[in-house]
Amino acid sequence: MSFRLSTRSTSLRAPLARLTTTPITRRHLSAYGYEQTKALAFTNYGEPKDVLRLHSHSISPAHKDLVTLRFLASPINPADINQIQGVYPSKPNFSTTLGAPEPTAVGGNEGVAEIISAGGSVKGFQRGDWVIMRSPGFGTWRTHAQTTTENLLKIEDKSGLTPLQAGTVSVNPCTAYRMLKDFVTLKEGDWFIQNGANSGVGRAAIQLGKLWGYRSINIIRDRSDPAATEAMKQELKGLGADIVLTDTEAMDKSFRTVIKEATNGGREEIHLALNCVGGKLVNSMAKILAENSHIVTYGAMSREPVTVPAGLQIFKNISYDGFWVSRWSDANPADKKKTVEHVLDLVREGKFKDTPFDEVKWEWETKGEELIKAVQGTLQGFRSGKGVFVFGKT
Ligand SMILES: NC(=O)c1ccc[n+]([C@@H]2O[C@H](COP(=O)([O-])OP(=O)(O)OC[C@H]3O[C@@H](n4cnc5c(N)ncnc54)[C@H](OP(=O)(O)O)[C@@H]3O)[C@@H](O)[C@H]2O)c1
Image (cartoon, rainbow, N blue to C red; front, side):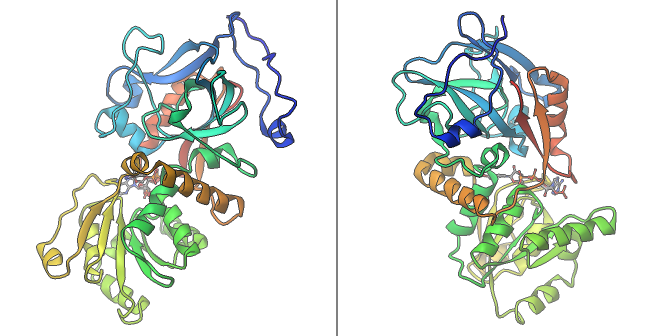
């Protein structure tokens, strides 16, 4: 294997913006132009620390309808861990194309990559374009990949965006966006309530809700240090949250009174609840909803089931819905592109702030253990930020 700078030159007709935003990267090419690549891969389900390994292989030069991608940023989402554990409904793609003796899958479902070469029959995509994955299951924790463009969505305007912003737009912000829009028709001034409010999805819901004029009641978990709880409350209020309560406060007898006071004696009804935690907390949320409301469950961080009190269903006609962005994306690719582009416009306009990230640098020399350690911690609570692989010189 030889290491040398790519000799491929960028087209002279390429816009200046592309020339300035495309990083010059030392490429790892073999004598025959094969791209050397590394992936966090697994052949069996299990805990990430037990089953993931850093796997090296090579990718042939892009030809026909294939494009070669170099990843720029890929987040580590809770669902990615469940997928490696084998407990997630969307299964990874175990394949023999990675040059491993057994069928092997690559971890990660979300990310942004740059096209570094395109085959002769590729239309509508070119070298330098940034792309995200059309559907989950792609395997995004890798330095490079080769695919056809039907699996990709192009970021039409990457100006003013960081790879981190583009690489984390398609799951959490899209989930918050669709849950606020697709279950209940909220008008300006209307309320919604959510738990897990400091999660990536929760923060996106606060911000999008605020932009659309909705008011939010947000539930977070108590921190062991009251000052840290207060700091988290203030942080979410800074994003646009109207009310932030802890789960202890939301399960207390006083909860109804607090909400009644905030909603003009209960005259301002609450029709939408977003739930990614589960357990008894959901019943507290359900009790303050108006008739014909919707509780949308999209996660189960506490691993406790959602129990449905018969009275709330019969007499208040509360609907218990679920939302899964993967299913929605598969069914609505055009809407997914529009939703992604709308959020990215908001990011560019400075109206949508990043969730706190814990950047994990992935350079060519980075050891597998360091990358796997970053993945393993993802399901631990009280984290300071979401883990994201940010690729350097790969
Ligand atoms: N259905 C979908 O389409 C969809 C899409 C995106 C995300 N999700 C799900 O939404 C949830 C949040 O994802 P994310 O990426 O936004 O999360 P994230 O940014 O990684 O944050 C994790 C959140 O989970 C909370 N949490 C962790 N352990 C908990 C526990 N034992 N009990 C209660 N809360 C706990 C954390 O609160 P602390 O800070 O208090 O620990 C934090 O609010 C996950 O369950 C994820 O799988 C679903």
